Image (cartoon, rainbow, N blue to C red; front, top):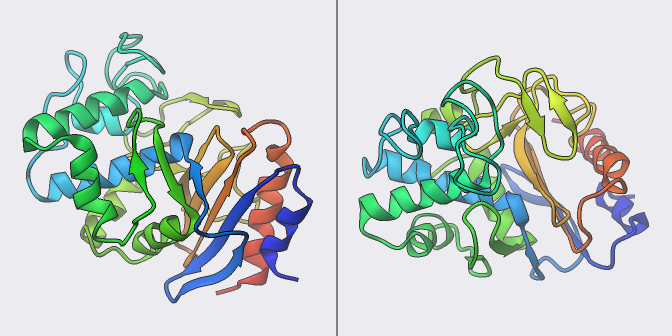
Length: 270
């Protein structure tokens, strides 16, 4: 039995999934070319475009962006103080971890303004085209409006395992804790103390409960989306997993996603 065969028992109409190593896709399930709504997995792609822009010196982590006192770093790490879905200030920058799609909209606007390139075009040129992600697009909010396929996201996952578009040191910084010790709400899982985040990447650390597996290492990073999607990378074992479904995240996913992740880890030891 392949790890991903567990998905056949899920209450979803359609699902596509892969397990990715540095050697490529090592397990697959469903139609890998089917395009799904990504919801907040969008943020991983937008954050990577921001990292490219930082390396190109088009923007800087410490430049002002968003509310007074907020920077690009604050926007990427959900510490700008902006509310979840509107550009309303709820806290001083750096004081709380407030998960904010609105912050990613401000981030995209900042990149567009400083590069002179519409953000959808910048994302396509900086991330999608170099990785051959021909099924991917952003047609809505930079916080949750992208669509993609498991095939495309597998290419992106491989990039996260062995970066080519940014330096390894840039990715290492992006997957390290920003503003250490801040508490906050992890959507769907309640209060986390601390609620650690990198630069666009949610960090597993010792969070409990969590959407990844019990056996995922504390260095695991990624994101899940309310549309029933997730992508995680566990650098300790050199594996990534992409899962896309057409059933909105809910109570059904809370036992099944970690079970699948643990099965992937057990069947693909390093």
